[in-house]
Amino acid sequence: MLSSWTTLASLVLLATQAAATPLVSRQAVNLNVPTTWRSPTTTRTRANRIAISKNAVNRMIQYKNGHSNQNVGNMNYWPSANVWTEVVMHDFQAGTRDFIGTTLDAVGDTFGQYPNFRHNDWNDDTLWWQFAAIYQFRAYGDNMALTWARASWDFVTRYQITGTSGNGKNFSWPSQCRSKSNMGGVFWKLTASDTYVNAITTALYMASSAHLHDLTGEGKYLTAATNARNYIRNHLINGAGLVQDGMNIQSCAITDWVFTYNQGKYIEALAVLYGKTGRTEYLDEAVNIAALSMKQSSFQGTDGVITEGQRTPYSENDDARNFKGIYLRGLAVLYRRAPANHQIRNLIRAYINVQANALIDLASDNASNPIHYAVPWKGPRNSGNHPWGQLAALDALSVFVHVNN
Image (cartoon, rainbow, N blue to C red; front, side, top):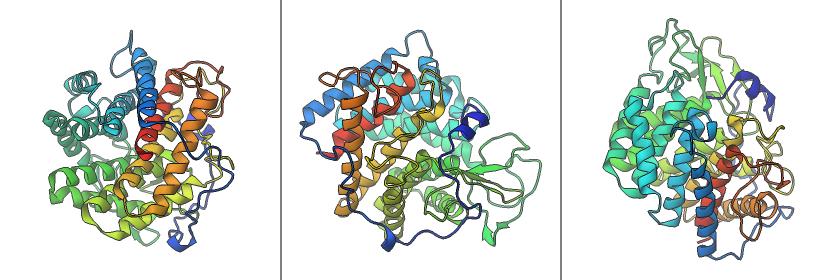
């Protein structure tokens, strides 16, 4: 969830057509690396990149001092889930096990306090913690983490639309909007009267289902992922080919805000589905959205450095600070799952290098020995040390390790 609708509205990045329209064709997408991008390559060794990422993780963990695992650095429940996810992702990308005890303790503590990871009425918050468990299993092979992930999926599945009523709601809704099926979307909130079926909850659930199908081979997960994908394709892809925020399931009204993290989780879900099934339609769509979003002017300038989530004052705790890190994580999954698609891999590598180089050169406390990172990735570096600035940087630095192997 976002901390408030007021915060969300202040961060709207792109107003697009209210009605969902077909995807921009793949042929229209330019996969070349723009010549205007800042520092799209690196000469840093793998060992140096791992050290930079690990130093950032250690600084992030210090923000837990005096706080719970669910409130790291006084951040909310779902950004705290991403803290532990991103710590795990350092180990996953680096091929290490440096933080296995720390992360398993944090996620296990949360599942113990909040069964199924449900702490509030937002399904996306539950799913963010579930992803910490999924990535723990991928990084460390811990079977308990997979058990937690499966249990959490079972809980959220109750809120995936399969008809025109139910799902714990006290109202009914049409079977179609704009002559397209509403099946497969996932309600944002458990609240009986809430009508919003949004992209991040549905994409998280789709990606969760794709990962669990990949890990277990069970068909129920593939069915759930496919249905979630159909909802997003039917209703939430705008005329620019990007994922919009959500839809009121009763009125069919689209909320046309566009954020990086919606693109990232959808790309991740598609990439995992492609990797497991080999169906090129998943790869084509993931490549399409990835290429379009990496060149979307509302996300970054001509230098390629992401500017989303940088409203002032930087000292203000704002959930949207973390969107861009989640986006890069999704791009890195596509990079990993599409080894034969050299064009998209080259574009993703260049884009991630742009972000990491900007962080180190312009936003770190010391470019020679970076530890802490500011909220704005283009600096100034003296704009303050805040946990939400550090959190967004972790994903960029861990995927910086992987894409330059």
